[in-house]
Image: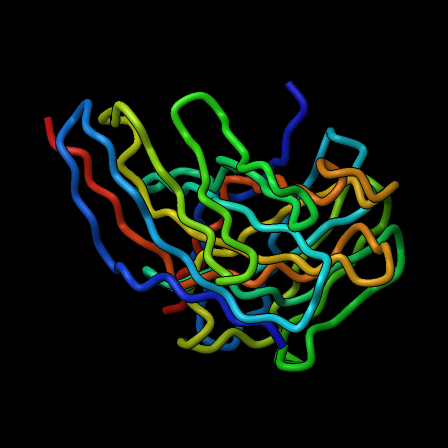
Length: 118
Length: 117
């Protein structure tokens, strides 16, 4: 079974600054996907960024980037130039790619509440 | 825009009174999921469908059932809601086809917040 750990229950950052959210995971799988999801207050969960475990290059989506350390089983999210709209609960999630199946159970971390202050 | 729609957004039911939550999608995705999310916690997968193939999580209570009459719709039935079933219920979809990166991505609806009185 997989576990995902987010050790920072809450984080805060000033607008325009950079913040990094931590995530570690434990798995015996060699092939898997990692995701960061954002859930704003009272709004729906949306995908922020995806990383395939077989790719060494860290994923980047505009102001969002990850630091994927496969050997260390670490997957942190960096948000640059933080904006007020980034205020949300952020979930790290793991999805195994077992036998080439392309669907399955997302294992979520406990979440990190990020508050961006003006 | 293609999306995942959940109705109603807020549902109040009485203890023990059956309730049905609805999810529809215009993404034409093969896989549909139901998650339960309690306050400030991570979503917990209840079950999912790949087309009409139903997959129940081992720890999903028997009180929860699901139906998927066609590709677009999926329902969550709670037969006898208890106070502990009050939560946000999230529906999600994914393409579930060839093993390409975005086939795995799950797209979430806005959720239905269930209150049990």
